Image (cartoon, rainbow, N blue to C red; front, side, top):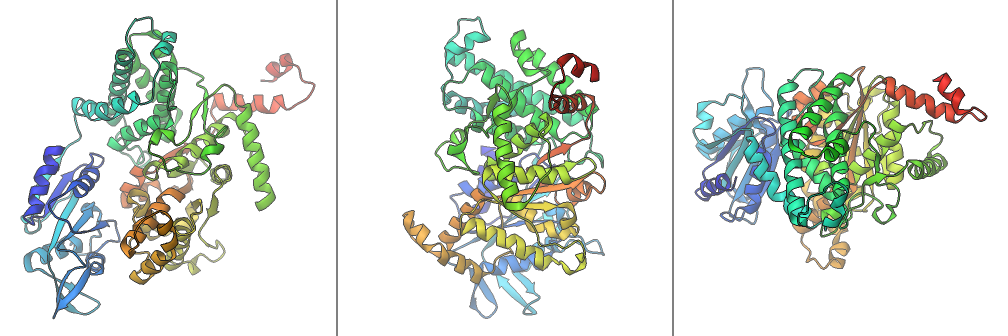
Length: 589
């Protein structure tokens, strides 16, 4: 990776455009962002364009002109900078015209060939000078030779197991070593007289190898289909598991049992929660158990990872110090404590309290706190507390979306967040346009960025009937970009409204720094929760139009109750009947 970034920087030094090609999920966007962040060769402006089915040459032209200033005649240069680095992500997803041409790639080719771009607004040829393109593209997309001949092309493939082990070992082991794992407490599961460092390194190494092997098997086990379009097993999937593990561990006094139980829980949530059927979940559990038995030499380790009835994990009880989403700290592990609960009683008490508070302000809400519902709400709360890039949720309810909406509302109540939804009217859907949706989404962004309120933007399936509505939501979820929602004048007004906040933070004021401060507040305070159903599921359409959004968001499938869940539900209702003995309860079950 470092070698690739170094060579790309050398190309940028001499203003040679860079093209990064690879299949989805191999880290093209991450690598390009790292290259732009660490590049010392060109200190210039950077503009990002995330392509989708509505991105054409006109959108690219407008985005470039926003960062240019007039010099003479029809010549433009980057504002207050020597260069403009234009990062175009997912070029293969850009709009294709009826004649088969992709106007984005043709606009780029025209700009490189002739240094000008045709402007529709002024109906003239504008020379945009000192612009360097960095482009990522899918592996199966065919590019014309007239376009690709200008670029220094690099091809990325999905890393091999050895490379993945090296990548995640370097980060995970160093982070876990700072969690103050007490070696004496490993005696619960280990009889070997090893040092703390040796035990930690050996255990973490096995965890990394099992995670990589399970994902490798799932990639070959579940091929892409319309029903399983959200089965995306990419580098981000592994990264999310380890990030959740690191932010959830206690700062000190962790045991092997804590680590294994939390990791097993994250594996189940990362893979099993998005699976659509019991058969798929059982195949995952079998794969996980086989890999655990292969790399763990101790039966106690395997038993913890493959427990039939795992404990409830929650950060709801005792999380008053971490009320809300992110808490800015120097360490990700200090965000809040997400731990196994000895029993669900305290969690249920807290949830009932929040439901009663919700009823006082917004009216009645009818929801039963079954075991599966408690676990789901706890997980949604945990995800929404995470950093922005892993802190958004898509709930897919099998049949009716009502339960998904109720879970989102209770999670928002627990976090103290305001629920904001589009002002969509089902009685008159034609009156709600893209402009109205952008106004609603912009209002939520301003509330989170300027006023510092915790906002949950709840987007239901019928409110996203027009696929174009999700353009800006996808950009925000995948890259926290709000480009196109705010004009230059609105950005200046936002900066002015944050002048006092910057002064209090000891930051010198200018409009660019103020808007970056605004974006940071938005990242910390705004979360997106989407709900849909299997009856009219738009996942297939969303996956084809916005693959980066579906890759970044946490998908949770809410299936119909199976026999085990039906048994738990029956026990729940029988326990509420007074005077019924345990023998009669078992008889009725």
